[in-house]
Image (cartoon, rainbow, N blue to C red):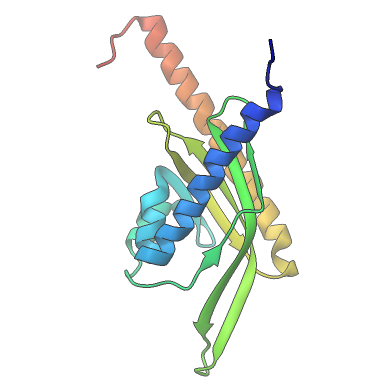
Length: 171
């Protein structure tokens, strides 16, 4: 009898998250920033613009069209519960600066994900920073995002507990 090590299950969960991240990046490349982000976001997702706001409202208000934003994950971790995870890695975007010259901006990103009931990964928080001066901002944003996600989990747990204790039937 052979039992696979515990970490192989964790690796499979992380692999599904990495696949979702690559599919997200392909959607942005194929359909543009607005539509790509809207496709993979959770309805409760948060965007920092620089203040936190509904990502649905933020991305819905953007113009459709192509995007030169590219990225790929270099790190992915999934919680033991299998329903939360994060990815991070480098990003790059080509653009035209205010003087009409071609320019490149690059940095690092972190994305906080959760798995929906139908098994799909959807992002809750996606933050990218450029340059070493933005590291403090990224740290604060990540901390806030993790805090918001934790509060959401507690509220959902308490709501479910209230429903169970009241004996209500769910449709």
